[in-house]
Length: 244
Image (tube, rainbow, N blue to C red; front, side, top):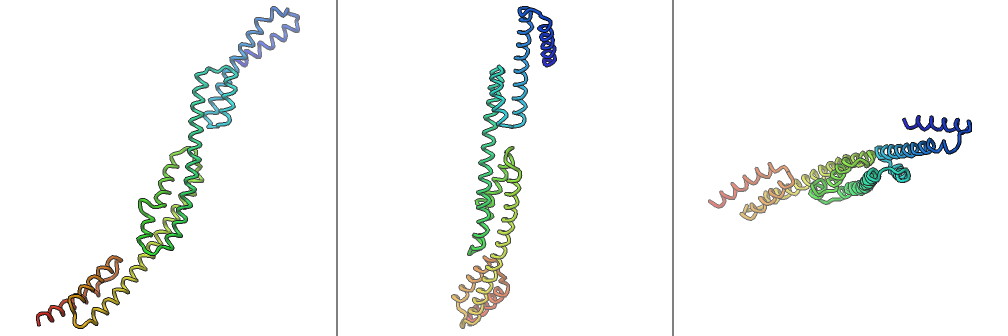
């Protein structure tokens, strides 16, 4: 090993000087020692540079590049590490931008819950779970973040937790909105049934209006069985009156 050669040469030179060996005779071994020291420094600089690169330590890599240049490491090796360093910096910056995007998506998703609460129709809430929704955007951003080495796992975990919570809340709100609309439709249909039942005589217009009321109620998944029974009865009455 070079370290052993350097140590032995230094000891030999010290002993030679102590013994009074002329300076001229020590010149060659001194130059050899200096040459070995240069080689060792170059090897250590290259090794340190590669280790820093393997650890993805940007500051260490930058410091090691400076030492590598001073130690005379081959330009090809220095250029290789410089390219890898730039790639690493770009990757870290991309991860930071992705984390910022994650935080914005989280804010949007949390705001969507309040929007869902204040929505007037179930359809508006349903849109919040669709392909162009904020929850879909958050899910997509999480998937992209998982592919990046330097996005912190804690940021992804937080985003996943918010996504699950907000998605569950919006689904709950959607069920509540649909149930509310269904009950409102059934109540409205009940009024239409009373109107149709009390109409005298049962005309074609009365039947048509009632048919439209049933169709409107079906949109909200309302229970239309009683209305359909009444419609059949009214149609029969209308036919009998028409034939009379």
